Length: 414
Ligand SMILES: [Zn+2]
Image (cartoon, rainbow, N blue to C red; front, side):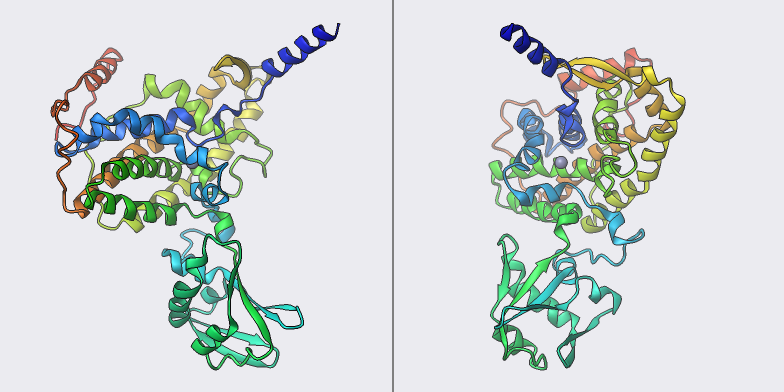
């Protein structure tokens, strides 16, 4: 009898495991496809190297998600909760990393008696343009923003990965002598109130820098690693629900919508119906703006993503919304194909558009980093790879599209 209960329990757990297979972003499926297909947007000088390593670029596309469990600094790189910061286009968020951290970190003075008093409230810089007025006890003073930012960059930002950001008050007071607050202080403490809400576009810029440096050094391993990982974050930047506090519909009673939009729909329909030819990679003049445009565009879709699903659930037969599907040897509860198709149709190609935009953006960013690095020859990897773009894989894709009766293939003949 005990064994029977155990078997029933095991069956129960197996049969009704929730659809947690896609707790990544774009799911494994999407990230793998985006990284892989971006290779085909590249110019002749780059494609042999990337083609040679296409399996690495594909297989490691989800490494950043795996790391989320290893370090608390990783998770915040995958999203930005724009809506908590006000209204689009969020001009109150400085687009540079030092600027945004300086603006959105509070400063606390810790007295010898053990009290801590906030002397600067995160966000005040932006309200008062370039200056703020800080008050501590009876002394008030202005803090020149550009001077403060330089100070922050030198003394506080290097502590980013530390648990506490503290400073000897004397250093602060030497820099800002009119801040007559130091005599009674034990220390000054900075508190980051920005990062927990997501740093995605800032992290993209950092990855861009690292990738460019790797190309400059012709360091194959680093090129591969950063090219692969930036692909992950670029993919995330194109997902609307990676730009909102309501990232899984949890605030609007739509739990599970995250995986529905970014995993279930592409897995069901991408290979059969999406147009994967996105045209050749293009040089990006202003990568910072490019990343922000991607994130802001994703964010502009958040309303549609949520509203359409909510309306559909009200009208679609309830018993046809969820099905049981086998996945990696487990039975999971997930949206039925017909329900997913209805949602996808109602979104009018939105998922496909973001998918295609991710692929094109990734190719363009790889290309841009390579150009910025002075177009290094990627020769070591070339030998056994045909330079031709018309390789087996690409032929198969063309064939598949031909079979579907679609005349596609614009702009990929460079
Ligand atoms: Zn991610």
